[in-house]
Image (cartoon, rainbow, N blue to C red; front, side, top):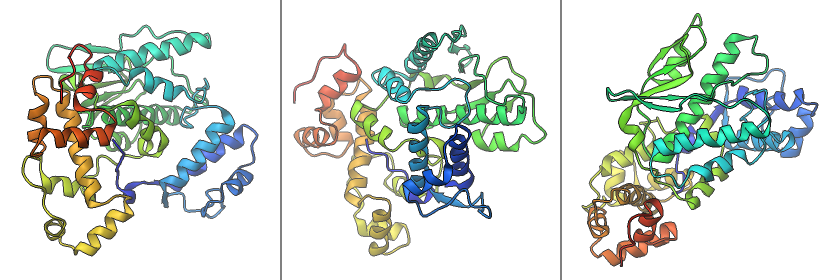
Length: 365
């Protein structure tokens, strides 16, 4: 499924771009030369630059990818004392993308991380990554021994760890196609003078001075099926990392979020026409088409991708027959659903379901 986050939220503070350039400069590269080679219309290293000014996330991604390529380090510029070789995140994604549930993906990710540590003679994490607590909640513990460069700056270290955890949360949300319902975030660091930033970052209670860095989450999240394929993963990785570093999916006021609310969760009825949609949004059809174009999409593509999003979610529910999913999506004929789904994913609905749940036989068209 193509990532369709709104472009007006694909923005990051200029200071993030400067930080990435400083990571490269600390390794002996010339930041000014690096910028010139990218030919970007911004200069994060300018002496009078407004570090809080928002820049296009694509500019940040270009800087990130160049620095990552130079340093052969894929740790998102977070200053880990162990380099993460370029390609590691892609291999991790491929390692977990065929898991059936989020719990399986989290456990397998921990296994992958431990294996990578053995290659660099780093100690393995012996912590059990996922634990169901029996009260409707579960604990996901992050790997141990995450040491940071300049860890003597405890505030910087705790902020870096929190950012790493926020990135992982957004990745999990992408995997399951829905929010990860956090009850609390556990941090090993002591509480800073101002904890508001951490609360804003996660939108839940923050508990400092804990035994592990961990998520306390609703247990049902562990049973959520992964909705993506290698094809949608490829598209996701092509646009990394800014949609992992910036919390766009939480913006309920975005145009596409408003459109989804207008359509609702029942797709069995006819979609509103573009005229009706524009009226609901209090704008002209011309304005709606222009704003969708700014988001690199169209009204038809929005409808197709919303159907695909619901289709993949419902196909991960084995109790639903393929024909039932077709009806839920508003297709008059199952054959039309089969054709559309194959156009979206390169697979028939039965093939997709079999790829996610191998024990289920492929249903004939």
